[in-house]
Amino acid sequence: MRPLSGGRTRPIIWGNGMKTQMRFQKILMLVTLVIAAVSIVYALIFCSGIMMQVSLVLEFDNSDLGATELYNASQSFSDLFLILGVILIVATVLLYITACQKRRKYYVTNYVAIGIVLAYQLVYIILLIINVVNINSAYNNLDMAQCELYYNTEANATYGKWSSSTWMISLGYAYAAILFVNMAALVLNLVWKIKLMKGEKKLLESGLVKEVA
Image 1: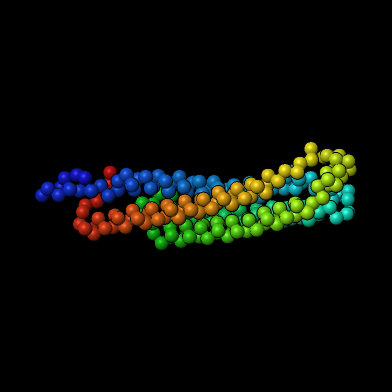
Image 2 (image 1 turned 30 degrees about the vertical axis):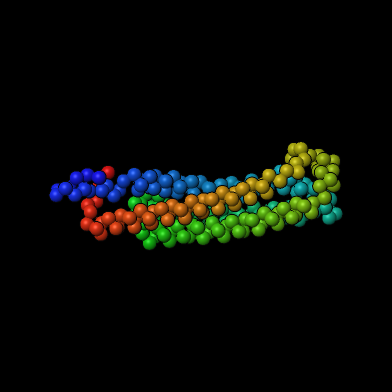
C-alpha cells in the first residue's frame, strides 16, 4: 500500500498475484503447445516394435494368428491420430493467436479459444482411450508364440529381435492422463484469472487508484 493525499492508501492492484498468474499462464500455454506436438510424434512412432514386426508375419503366413487384425488396427490408429494430432496443434495455436499467454485481462476471444482447446482435448482423450483399448484387444488375440516363430524363421528377424512389448499402448494411456492434467491446469488458470479480474474490478469500482508495480 502507498499513501495518497488525505491519509488514504493506494493498493497496487497489479501486484504479486497478477504477476504470478501471468507467468503461470505463459508457461502453461507453452506446455500446452508442446503436449499437442507430442501427439504427432506418438502417431508416427506407434507402428514400431511388434506393430511393425507382425507385418512380416503376414507375408509368410495366411493362417489366422491375429497378425492381420493387429497390423490393420495399428495402421489405422497411426493414420487417424496423425490427423487428430494436426488438428490438436491447430486448435492449440488459437491460444497464441488470441494472446492467451500474455493478456492481463481476458476477452471473449480468449474464452472461446480456451473453450475450443478444452473441448477438443476432451474429444481427443475419449477417442484415444477407445482406440488404445481396441489395439490392446487385438494384441491379446495375437498368437504370440506362432508369430514369433514365423518372424524368426521365415522373416529372418528382419526388424531386429522379436519384441512383445506393448509400450506404445501404455504410452497411449499415459498421454491421455497428461492431456487430462493439462485440461485441469487450463481450467484452473482460467478460474484464477477470472478471480483476479473480478478483484481488480471491485477495487476500481470502489474508487481506488490503479498503479502498475
